[in-house]
Amino acid sequence: MKISRTKLAFAAVLLTGTATAVYAQQDSPESILPPGFDNPAPAPAPAPRPAPAPAPSIPSDSSTSAPVGDAMTNTAAIEDQPTAPVDLSKYELPEQARHGLGRIGISVLGNPAFPANAFGASNGKYLATMMRRIDAPIASRWVSIALRRALQSRINTPKSYDGADFAAERAWLLLRMGESIAARGVVQDVDVENYTPLMFEVAMQSALASADPGALCGIAEPGSKRLPERGWAFAKAMCAGLAGDPSRAGQLFDQAAGGRQNIDTLVAEKVMGAGAQGRRAVTIEWDGVTTLTAWRWGLATATGVEVPAELYRSAGPQVTSWLALAPGPSSAARANAAELAATQGVFSEQGLVELYGEIETEDGADSAAVAVARDLRTAHTGANMADRIAALQRLWNNTESQRLRYARLVLTGRASASIPVSSDRSGEADQLIASMLSAGLDSQAMAWRPVVKRGSDGWAMLALADPAANAVVSSADFESYRGSADRRKAQLAFAGLAGMGRLANGDVITLAGTLGVDVRGENAWTRAIDAAGRRGESGTVILLAAAGLQARGWAPVSPEALYHIISAMRAAGLGNYARMVAVEAITRV
Image 1: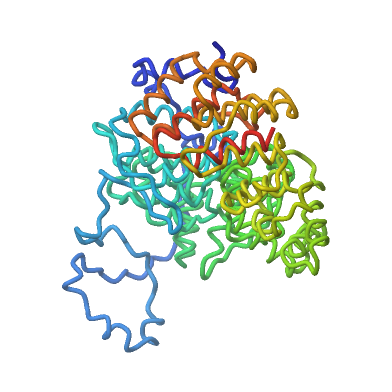
Image 2 (image 1 turned 30 degrees about the horizontal axis):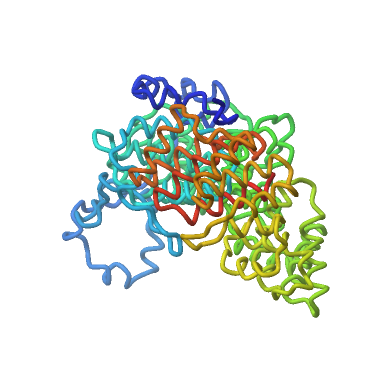
């Protein structure tokens, strides 16, 4: 049978006991620099420099250091002293402050964490291989949200697997999903003394994706010792510059550059000169640059250098999400990226609303972005209901693509929820409901049930989103919807209802035959996700769901795949996510 038209070619390998062999063949995270840039080159002998002033000795045991009060009484004397880099490796964390490798992750306020045993007893190499092979981003916003929460939660490290390497695999997938903040949190929950070569690589990727080269300064020295890549030599130079030691920074930079000057050395030099007492003024020109790498994007963005829009087309979509989350660029510069990131689950409805609130008052903002901000304000606070609904419709309909339209549904979720339920507005009910549910506002959406027309999209979305555990849909009601919807949408709605257990068993078999949806078919992937659901392994289920949704949109996703995803998520205790995924399927086709 043909369960999915998505990228499941590797499922049979993953799920038939050969994951170990496949894992050994996986590539490391892609290089942050162009081909050949990492090849070691002989460094010229540095020009003679005046000998630096001797650095003050730093006691290795804090119990023998001078009292803090004594050191702070004479600030003038301190300012007169020569500065020297501080060797952080001489300080040791107390035992109770160290992070163990048995359970790694972060807690985020307002985001329900996955349980520590979310991956059950699954083999670590099997999980890591699947993470490495997932081609992010994936089709579903809600599966992406669930996957982010699973990967960043404090979960147990699988037995017989290095905790730092497992955390690195999790962070690497988060970065490819565009989740730079979540990835950084996972990386930072591993103590540097426990870093593996893979964790060093992913840590650098995380710092660049966050546009924060300063995050490299605690790992630049050990990283350069473990990995011979030129990027670590530049990291040491940049960190010396950021620490206010331009002489040492210049020497390290010249050694790393080896006489080369190109876009990659220039962005590193610009970071190096951004520190106190920086002596190098660097102008970045993008002429002749055809490829955007993490190195170029991260260092340029960190120093306020705008990356040309056309270069984003040469990079993966995750870089657009990194831009959306970056703290430096203006709100107007991030607006389009943030809307696209919202469709991937990286940016929230609340975050979008706040962003457009800033744009409305920002000098020099693009007129189109300002128009969106003003329509959004009207949708929330318009003088009358007609104005508010007209503003919503402009936001939904004045878009260039189906993907951007979905972003606007997310953006207007709370504005739609503020529209009072009325039979006079039944014509707008479908879009209002789609908007509320795209933002996860299911209770507000359910209030429209008395108003929606039987057989409409609004009816189908509410039937799928109903939080009642015993909700049932009759075959007659579904046939009413099938008669008004196109075949593709009817198939996905059926898959969602059947997966949620909302159709009688007899109706499932009958409707499956009528619609041509083979819910009884099996392959390695369906057996794996169904079994994970029965075992209650929420993390394994959501990882397998992501593997089954590897596509830039919903067009390649089969109803059979959706059925197994919804069913397994519900069985594993992810019913709330399952309901939203089922609604999303018919909203985005």
